[in-house]
Length: 289
Image (cartoon, rainbow, N blue to C red; front, side, top):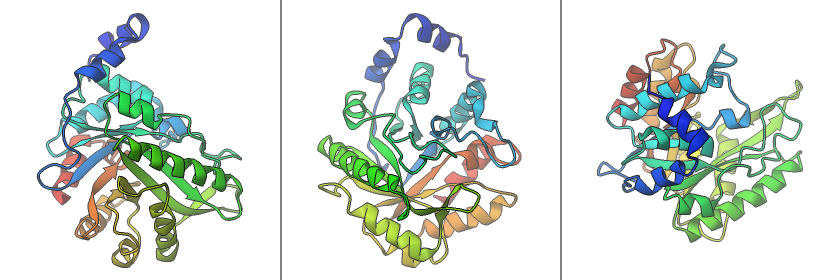
């Protein structure tokens, strides 16, 4: 368990320590020598999504979550982390982000289960702050439901964010889905190959340039044809490992061979594996790369 006493004291007495830690942080190129990128995602809590599998509040304990992330970041082959400001700043104060890629999560306003979920406002990082903090990019979730007007606001906001990140020469990581509201009122993503190809085509055209745009995509059926929808570099979305992690790892391994796929962004799947062995789950993912 990382010693959180200094972090807690700094939060209370020295808020300027966050900016100081960011200024001291050593940076690295986005892609390493092997041309791969492996990022640990931990931006779920800011959207109110705290559950993992049958553990409804797994990510609610920030102390436990930080311990798991620190374990993951300590493993060879892990390149960086994706999160909102509160979590990234905790990690900065713990001193575990030197030489790591840092991606800030930008739109977290589409709270899980809310009536306004698809009107996903940008309530976290903006491009100017990511640049000022010396981070490496910004991530946005783009869920498009043709029947929900809130999707239009999200689409427009994502387009502006892509342009603003590019102006600072920062990666814009776009996670696109075609979505719909099911009969139970919950938002579902259409993971058919046809829907993913449409979502990728829309996401690829956002903003006044695509030069710095990367895609974050789930592993779905007919992945070869899906990934031919764009020439943009892509990272695989981890998702939930479920009851049979070997099946998921096998799908990741196959998809990682596709020419535009550059790596993996995984969060709950590796931070909360079925056996709770974070190091082993992360090492297995690294071996796929």
